[in-house]
Image 1: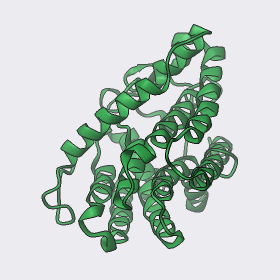
Image 2: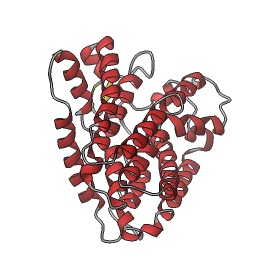
Image 3: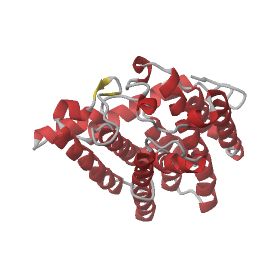
Length: 302
């Protein structure tokens, strides 16, 4: 992890992440209480509260605060983003998809509750996420509507689902072009990361040009995130990752390292992060959290 560099001198990313993660964990716990039917709420909470970096809600909070908003304005959306991300992990781990037994160091949802409840837990988290954004207090309705529209685009056929479909269709093929790989990951991974940042900005009342600038920042870190993920699938252990290592190779997936090699992949990720950081220069020290989070993405070990 990078704590500070030339862009963020005097800013402790480690401290910031710990503080923000604690705040997010508390908010997530309070966002979803167990009621009837108990089984589905337990399954939803099992995966939602299973830990993880909480990078997506933290990005949302950081963007909102950089543009003059407050954590309270963005917290419901931050939690909703983690609900949507958790849904994607539950469904991605299913036997019909990536068929994984381990997530965040724990048995996957379907291994504990069965495939039927796991599917329903993901569905319930997804629908509840939109409700939770709509229930945000003290934020103008038109801002919430913009966020809801962008969330729908990011998670549907225009975003996560579309990327997942092309990913499944590409498995086992040896002639997948880098353009197809970029399409997969800008949709499957990048679209949700992008809306984390833009939603935070919109909730703070950002101008359209500011939202566009933060979109470019998020697109760069989103692609860098996936390149690093591909590298870690090869170089890290299951204990480090908290999930099964080597799954891409086993599934015969084309990845950035398989096309470029590890060295070029690392260089490309660093270039994307440098561009992301440069785009935030107009915001000065207010952008330190987002700059440091970009650095963290390219230097992370899991």
